[in-house]
Image (cartoon, rainbow, N blue to C red):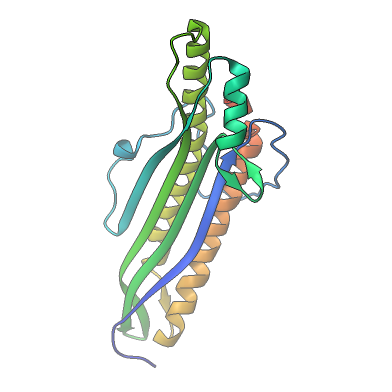
Length: 223
């Protein structure tokens, strides 16, 4: 049995969730979600409004853009198809990717081994299109694009909201973990964390199913 304090860093998960403009495909869903689903018509919390962040949870939330150009809906659609983020051979309009890992200390405690400190780190990036209307753009095109952008961001922030919820869950589940021997702690933490991340992935897939990859949220171009 190990008696000293131990520290380990385990990188477990890098994931991406996206919305395609056409033929989004079908993804298998899962049961047993760990956090409530985001209401389809409700904007997910912005990074500054996630509420009190518990000790041990480290959030790195980013929003980045790629630039599209055009003076009509068809031209913008072509730009989205050509310049949008690519994953597994497909081009998407909006994209959410995240990386989550943990770092912990543990030591012998009484008749077993206990976690003495735990950090869960989540890095989340949303990628969105950016368009500056040219002088000849029709006013209705600007209105339609603004609505599309807002709806697309709602969808992608829904993915982020789900993921932040699971990061909170990881902190709650891993912190009180105990094992008979400290030699078993790293494996126990890794296994518990992997199950939470798998639930996060299932919940994100389920969210895409429920929203038809954002179509039910009107995140479609052209509208």
